[in-house]
Length: 591
View 1 (cartoon, helix red, strand yellow):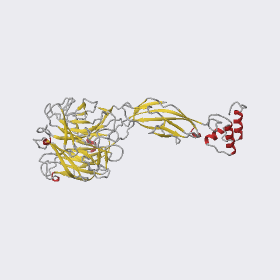
View 2 (cartoon, helix red, strand yellow; view 1 turned 90 degrees about the vertical axis):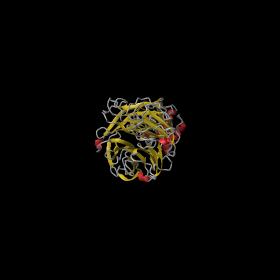
View 3 (cartoon, one colour; view 1 turned 30 degrees about the horizontal axis):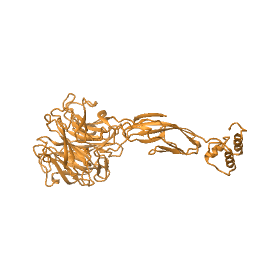
View 4 (tube, one colour; view 1 turned 30 degrees about the vertical axis):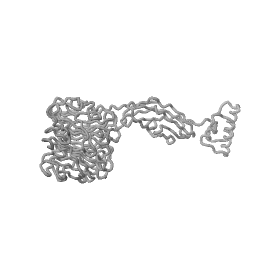
């Protein structure tokens, strides 16, 4: 009996964070993650340079996880390049490198198309997710009023068709010149429960209440990508208003999932010009939404609010990007990543940083982990103006260690770059508390065994699933069946199975942790002479032996083996005579 503990090999798991289950245009949302836990530090990373996919500049200004678009079992990524007005669809390998890519140019040319991007789920039911892409310098209806494109994709990442949402699509128009509608965008799932995904759009230079205070539009979509109706969230929706001129509320958007467990998703809104604690230190508002897109409650996180314990500096612009992370630390509450593209760790200038916020259910911060040039075990060589954290996207568990991972843009690194951050897992492997004992089986007799529920234990309290195979990893023999749900082995061996079978039982916590135990099943032939299988040798066994020899009684394979006293493979009168002599004491032993 041996036991072993190790991290499970990489496997795709269904994320339950933000927009993880895409089915028929409906994004199914939850606040919790299907992964194990992480402390928010970086275990290792993979860089994707913009030049390797043909980018010119500002590659990484936006990013969005797409799910597995090409069906290869690995999640894919969309990355914006807004100066050239392009969007890159990256088909990834499991190690975070790029297998293939597709570039989509702005359908109308320019307008900073690609400044923001989010997956919308499968709106049209073709099995491929649609994208919302911001173009904030679009001048439909007036200078830089902005636009958002709904892109319907083919499975190879090319553009099938699109729907443009801009000033003429709203009557009456809610926009003014230089509002920059489309400066940020995030999917909200099916907020109004009509079967079609909805979306939030930032217009961070909206002037409601004062100059450049900003706004967020919640758009309720039709399946063709047009707008059914909308809800605007801005200065006048808060009493008293916390916004000031040039706060840029809506500079970034991130879906948190259902933070307060009321059945409606909640939203994080970056406000990079907020002056709490100092000039342009930035802030993030956690908006607890109603199903109609209005705000039920809010919590501000800044240098002086929301129990945020880290120290921000002037012009850090905390909230440059935001992303929900699911329940990263396993406490039952969703967590978030916040980009600070102008952070000066290094020391340096605008090298950038990310804050991983472990949240409470009321939106305040329980603890913080910073990832930067000098923090969070991030070893990439950042330089001045790289703007690491310029975009964020929550990813699947690429490396199979049980914790979700993060894509982070560094748009100022040459032509721009994306870093895939493989977060450190703190998930504990299951352990073997009570090793499985070795077992005996007999040819032609039913074997049945159930190992106890306390054989394995998970230190994190996770549910375990079981698999069984031979100790060498090959499949169990045909005669032996394993029922994982009941933890039972059963079956009837034959003469060909005589010997020792070493069996390995593995326990997996579905979060990257696993262990196993091995035990032996020794298969023996039936006791020679005990034809009736009652455990003793007597004249009844002799009579059955004669009946088998004469053909009166065929007997089971086990009885035939027991009746073959001399082991010559044939039951005959000599076998019956030898057995009777042994029973009567004439013979001292059987052959």
